[in-house]
Image (cartoon, rainbow, N blue to C red; front, side, top):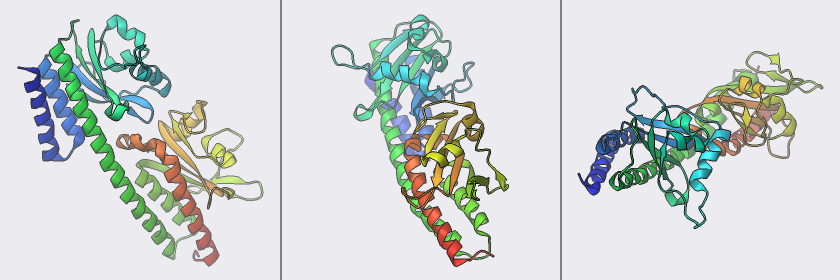
Length: 341
């Protein structure tokens, strides 16, 4: 089969799957299986930049002995690999394909954790408009040199994958914008309904914001007393502010922060176990205040983020801060109106 025919077959299979299911991830799985079978490789995977880290998001076959789907490198381990792809050579060019064996993989830092124990791998980055989003890898149990036909086919699939990922991102972005407007309306409706204490309504509001952003868990802490103690509104227990933690930091500094595996990647560079205990793998803390000039009256915390929303994590501090400002304003109005019993 010619290079053009195989590439066209893969393209047709992917487009058919998108039209059939509307699921971009299923379409990428379909295309990857066609690619691996078409060039005679043993395995294939897609590795994407997700929230500043490299993650294996697709693999074929999924039931292989080396199941890598869901493997995530830390930001520290991801950076050297990304730099290999984006750093220009002396002639100004960047890598458009690279073949690696078991020995040369070791020169790429923790790349072996993503590629498994295969003897040969062909890696092709996908970078729409020059922006590196990740790479495609096809792998073989036995060491072998990839033909020009195979390299060009993988490049073609990489370009197709980039197109699908951009389309998926834009669709999610539109959905998020619509969800923002709906959430703002629902927040106002929550506070307009009389009957429940303001603390209960506020906890529900934070849950609503977290759900919109894609977080499974949330927490609201409000300041109380002259000693400015943060009280968890779900159980009315005070936060130990003598012990450094993400909530105390956000309240003290007035800065939002994203934490990944305990690492504060927005405003805090130091990794600590305490943050991981409070926020798990990916978490967000946001000061609760009416505007940027006001003193915080509490802190919002959210964690356990849906994998498909990780692409937006860098935008979350700004988005969540806007909702926190709205929430603080609504709480102030509700308190003045003395609606709660």
